[in-house]
Amino acid sequence: MRQLGPTIGADQLERTLTYERIRYETPAEGVARITLARPEAANAQDYLMLSELNAAFDVAAADDTIRVIVLAADGKHFSSGHDLSAGEVDMDDFPTVGTQCHFDAAGTEGYMAREAEMYLGLCWRWRNLAKPTIAQVQGKVIAGGLMLVWPMDLIVASDDASFSDPVVAFNVNGVEYFAHPFEAGARLAKEMLFTGRSLNARELMERGMVNKVVPRSDLEAETLKLASHIAKRPSFGLTLAKQSVNQAVDATGMYSALQAAFSLHHVGHSNNMEVHGRRIDPSGIDVIRSEA
Ligand code: ZN
Image (cartoon, rainbow, N blue to C red; front, side, top):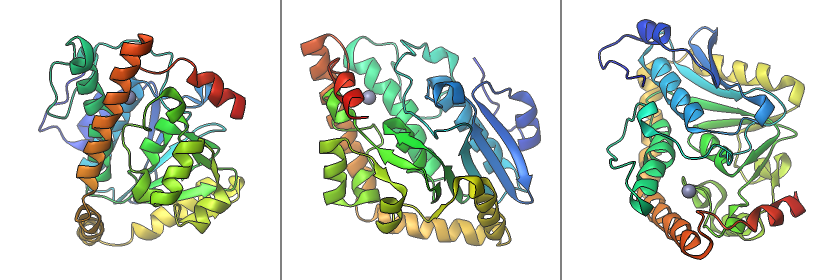
């Protein structure tokens, strides 16, 4: 169990952490870069990766010299989503940062608490970090992969990037951080979910769902250039600007909508458990693979 002391400084914090699933770097003045480092599994997310990611965001947030945070990924694909082979986890292995409890309870009680902590809770926490965040995205971003991209403030995509959430095939509504209507608009969000299809980089740009599309070979340099440009501005002004935009979106009821969708997500999981004895419909994977 790696508990982080509440008064520890960023330097100390960084020294106390060793990462297995990510890398933490400071590639330019004022810029921290966190990289998903599990390319052999297309950066599939297990709880260890999400927990390390959260710890690294905390390090960057606590470091007064950091003004912008980049979230990048090694390999061909940004992230294939949740690691479906991860199996049951022991929440005692991870420091929790939310207010959930009874993680080990049987049935929906424990499962919903775990997903509220590790998915909805962490994503919302990252969305509200006081510093600007930029997702640097290449290749496929599938389902849970979007839960790392949506909470970031800006998105720089390479020309081979594509976004999809095909998990309606698993007989649930979509991913746990259900920001799709806010990111894609209601009509496109429904099309994405009903069909499971991918949105390519051109479409993402046309729809205003990413800030910039660049050649794959330029992705890292272009993202760093943007981060360095932003990092020249004072930290508090950036925080105020970020919070002003976030609060405008919040005023439309985003958090309530996220919570409502999360509740329906667990109706889906519970129904699958009653019908199939599993949290997801086992026939879904064949549907998704046949259309990939
Ligand atoms: Zn779920």
